[in-house]
Length: 215
Image (cartoon, rainbow, N blue to C red):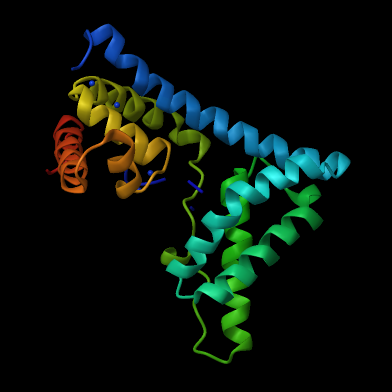
């Protein structure tokens, strides 16, 4: 999941009046917070009562994402599928070890998957991976003392999003919040794929400038 957020900090029709345009950006931040709490609660439910519905929801959401993450680490599709299922089985078995004060559900699950991938490579007698290699780590949770900087960054981001044209804002929402591929966004909005990609590039360039980064 968010492993899988870090450079979009390092995953919206003519634009309405500014007061209305700010709503989607606020919704984006709120949705991410609610999403984190939802999955944290699901793991706690599995730990407390072996809640099968909660686990099914976790499996349906994280299973494909974990498989994609493992493939990005170099696993073939079949191996990634097996390791993803093994990772989710460990989530079921070890849910009582999950501590939301130390990591989000997403970070915890992707860390399990990463460790399984490292173990699999060792068993295959391939060159060992360095577990401390940053490329193997999903996105880290921010330290508590970074909260103020994070709040300032979010404020700048909300302001920057509010300045985007509505057609660019909508595509940014679909791409980064809904995590939809560009081809699906093009079909949903009835736009050529090239137009979708162009609007995303333009929006990201505007955001970088607004956030004081190099375009």
